[in-house]
Amino acid sequence: MNKEILLREFISEIWNKKNFERVEKYVHPEYTVYLDTADPWEGKTLNHTQFKERLNFSFNSFPDMNFEITSAIQEENYVAITWILTGTNLGPIGDYPATKREIKTKGMTIYHFKDGLISGHTQVFDRITVMKQLGFL
Image (cartoon, rainbow, N blue to C red; front, side):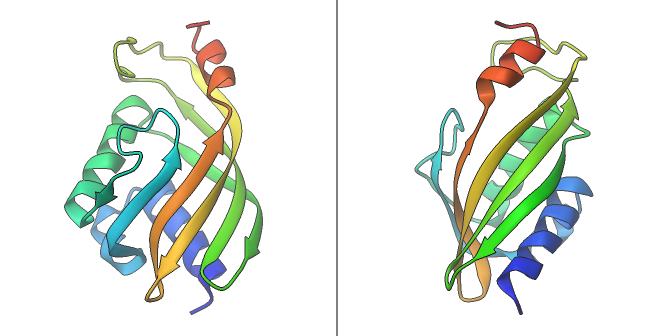
């Protein structure tokens, strides 16, 4: 399968529709978070159960989190995407309480592939804008 198509399905099914039962279809059993500043899983390799825990962690803070892919570039073992993230903060973020405010920010993720599945990511996004939109800065 085309890696970009697989990745677009992954974003839609897992992140936007929250179909966690489909994680195994898209995610390699060893998923590494190579770079994702402020992500508690940065530098760790996750199995499917841990990957789902990471999803729950994100959705506890932003249950309506949604990614709109704005561009994609496919290479042999990578697909890089730019995206717009929107969501409403309905749960705590670390020590910060829920604000019930909406966020909108941009970012870029390079997804790594192994054996035809997504095996990790390297990601950067504008967390300062998010903190400002939530009223923390």
